[in-house]
Picture 1 (cartoon, rainbow, N blue to C red):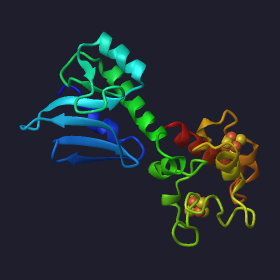
Picture 2: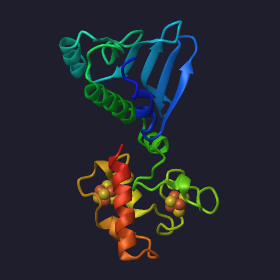
Picture 3: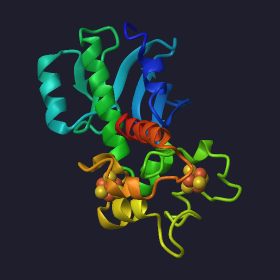
Length: 209
Ligand code: SF4
Ligand code: SF4
């Protein structure tokens, strides 16, 4: 296969796992337990297709442009497409297609499951790497925002706005990001500069998926 970068490229995406489907001999790349890409292997473990999901009109467009893009092998042919692994689809285009497949499958998950799959809170924090996680705090997603540093009996104002009011998976989709609520609920132990850096990191994490 000419796309030797593919495995590394997919595995560096947030929340991605891979397995081997032994009956089909497909290497599957998953987000939140759902497949968004697969490398189909023959009996000698040589790739013969790369399967990925696209918006139907986009899939149709690429099928018309490239003979190496065909309706999804062994898949729903409206949404899934198969790419020949030694064909003429440019590397950069394949990367874009894989990005889109990841984004489509992720967006198809329930919002809470999206955050869980990404290991992110609504505001881009990583509870999994917090020393309080599973000890004195169950985590933002698990507690539906009612964490110890939220107002008594209420969710954190960021969670309340993002999930309960705007029905977003995370603040990523909000044009006001990072808004005045982020400022209002800042950790008082952080200096101005630390808060600025922490905010930038969280925004980057959110926008990076
Ligand atoms: S919600 Fe809890 S576990 Fe998550 S980052 Fe905040 S304190 Fe840590
Ligand atoms: S206004 Fe936007 S950025 Fe601010 S908390 Fe609500 S969803 Fe998040």
